Image 1 (cartoon, one colour):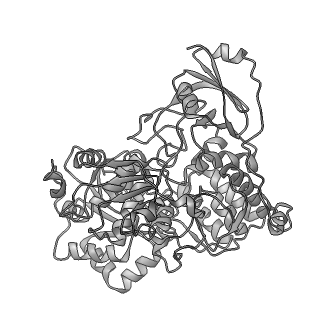
Image 2: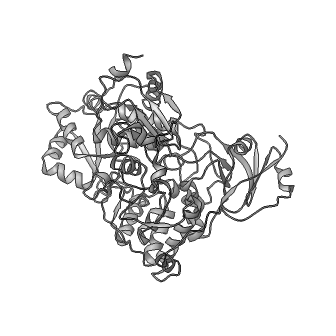
Image 3: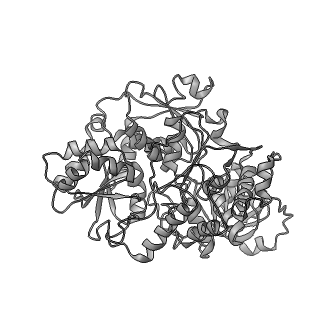
Length: 581
């Protein structure tokens, strides 16, 4: 193709010329890109096994985990990053990793958004050159280099942000260097998000304590050393190791020490060492309508959708910036009108469901929704439990970048269809059982029926799940060659121990791991001989093959216990799917 030049919206300025690597499917950098090599490790993604280093990455946007910011920062600091990122919509997670690298470490790449039609033309080309807000593309790199581009280096502009005197004091450094840099990042991202002012938040949940490499640790330590201290109640997400037992578990100190140091650094700044990816299970969970700043994709989705709290899907590092100032952009799901459903998902008639239905449905609807908030119709009589909604939300947040969902008659802002849609007619999609079977095959992807490890607790197990697991295991014997590992929060573990559940399950052969969760667990907690893992988590069934290099089976909690006792899993679909096959 001959060279074509387009104007876009610059989120981070700069220049680049390189070969294009493109996809029409969104990509999560956390769990989807190896921070050490820049290889795409999401085995469900069209770019799987390709390396992004020094390429112009052309994707619609990001999806999945808030921790993608940390991966991008790490890639920038180790010279493994793409040469530039081109999207067709604003993406906070992709952009913020570059903003942090630029603000704190002086490293940067261009990030630019194009109109969808222009985006498609660039995605089809071989090479791209970025200069300011201009993107030139074609099949001849030398010709692109010679083009005279009349570039505009101005970054994304938005209506002027109204800053309070307190906000300005932070920017002026009155409260120290850490909060000054934090406010600078907040204001920069607020402009990107189209906010007109900042608002107060009541609490924060920090996802940046996940260790993706030394870059994230350097960032946190720099904030601490600048005198950073949180000004709102702040909880911490799962870290990358079981803080109290990683040495006993045989974790390599080269990983365990910096991972635990990262947790220490956030505690030094005043955060509580809750170390859970399910902060909605804590006593500090927010109330409906409460303005909060939560990161961790499943927690964000649960807070917005099930609790009715108000938070955007905050990328890692913006969460701590807001916790240090107590101020957040007035944008996204903080605003009532931005919480409405943009599409309607209609389900078939359902009967005899088990708990595997909810993560499967969340996974599939996430693929359909992409960045749009859906309202799900057809579960009004199903009465999903809080654990079902947790599993649904986690899988939904894995395949979607949307910050929330509605379920008609179930979630608090969808008592009636008009409540979720503001009375407007939305595009409707009908889900058929054939669609769910296809998604089941993606999650239950191992061909070998044998099972070496049963993985439970992604997101962290609740107390009620511990009770149900104990009931299922009672009177049964675990297969000697199958490991069963449950991850949960310290608070849940303490409560389960007091109730006698921990000792009962340990007698069966369950190993409990706290402080970390499956998206960060490595050998030897995953035994080196393990080749096939079974899980009831749609989130882990998606991320696990790339993160661990193992094959995965997916099924209900009952099916997981059956596999733990027999060492094999059924090759058949569950009865509620099989009857429609």
